[in-house]
Each structure stands twice: as C-alpha cells, then as structure tokens.
Length: 296
Image (cartoon, rainbow, N blue to C red; front, side, top):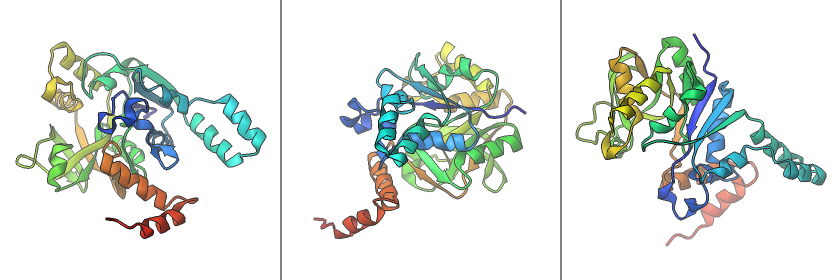
C-alpha cells in the first residue's frame, strides 16, 4: 500500500460571499485572530505526515504564496529586534512543508482544481482539503482519514451526522451500509439533496482521500461535458463514476471533532470569537469585553 504523502488544497475561488473584503485578500487568508484559515488546514495535514502541499490557486492568490514563503528581510529584522516568539511563528509557517503551486486552468467546478493536480500527484493516493474551512479533532481529521484509508484501502470521505434541514442544502450526503459504527460503505453520494429527499444523516464535509483513478473519472466528465447543477464539474459526480467502475468508497464520521465553516460569514465570525476567547494572550481580556457589551 502506498503512503499518503501529498495533499491538494484548492484555493482558487473568488470568495464572493466576503466581498468587498476578498477583492484584494483571498478568503483563505482571512485571519482567525493572528493566523490565516489556510494555515490551520496546512498544519493539520503536516501533523498527519503529509510532505507535499499542492496549492491550486488563481491570479488573485499571490498572498498565499507569500505567506508560506521564507521572508529573509522580515526574519532578519525580527532577529535583530530580539522578537524571538514572532521569529519562531514566521519561520514555522515557512518551514511547514514542501509547497507546490499550480494556477487553476480549465472549466468551472470543484472537481477541476483536483484534476489540475494530476501530473504532480501521479499514480498514488492523495488527500484533498479545502482552503477555507477546517476541523479540529483528536486525533486530527487528516490522521483519521489516513487511518481509515489504511484499513479499507479505498477512497475515504470526511463526514458528520446531521439532521439540520439547512445542511441538506449545503453538503453532499452518503448513501450505503454502515459497516461499523461511524463508517458507511457508500453505494452513491448525493449532492445537496434538500430536506425533502435527503437519503441519510451522514453529511460529507471537507477532507478526503482519493485513489488516483479519480483523475480518469474527472477527465471522462470533462471530455464528455458531464456537468452537474449550474453547468459545473462536481467531484461528487466523479466519485459516483468511480463507484460505478467498481471501486469502494467509504464515508467516515470524524470522531471528537468540531467543524469550522469559515467560508460562511456568520460561521467565520463565530470561529474568530471562539478562538479569541481561548487565545493565550488576549483570551481573558476578550471575554471581559464580550461580557461588557451593551447590545441594542
């Protein structure tokens, strides 16, 4: 069995839900107090043993590359100023992994950035994490996905249990047999089914491990114009094609986890507040500030 060494992080979207803020700043770089969203995603992958981070970006995402670069002048200034803690933080982000950048090309849809990475990923299984949301879990989500992949030797999807009607309009849902607690061997995956036709309570969220055969499925979709809703090429359709070709796919409920959907305005603000309240430097003062607010 080949080791999971690479993670693809699509980060080419325009972030229209956060305009005008994201006109110049990528949504993946929105700060959670003092660290951008995408760094939480990268740190999780690295903690799970990922060596190569493949970031699929667009023309307006240069600041992501700059963030993970090694800024010699800034580092030297921090050294000269004796700001050791800040120096360690800056060096940490630059030394996390081997970063590879691709500019997204081709048609529209969330399957396309995955397809763009095929020549770098090659013939090996790989992880996909979105750049604008993350999960905090113990063990972390990426580690749980790798554990499931090694057990089942098949593609694996992160999942949460939900009965919230609004979630049926936001996520795909897995259909299949629960082969052990929290693990569904899928027969198919339905994209955003809506509350009237939702087939299960197992919602597919951010974080997957795919076998390399997924690339051929996406390629087949693009060559034959097999688009989903809105004329976009959707990774869920590629998964269902992969399943039709005889490959197993498992949806795995992430244990001991908390999902942060920072691509949503309200959820982003909740995330910032939660992280600020437990921040070692400002947490206590921030809690006092919140208690003292006079809401009208």
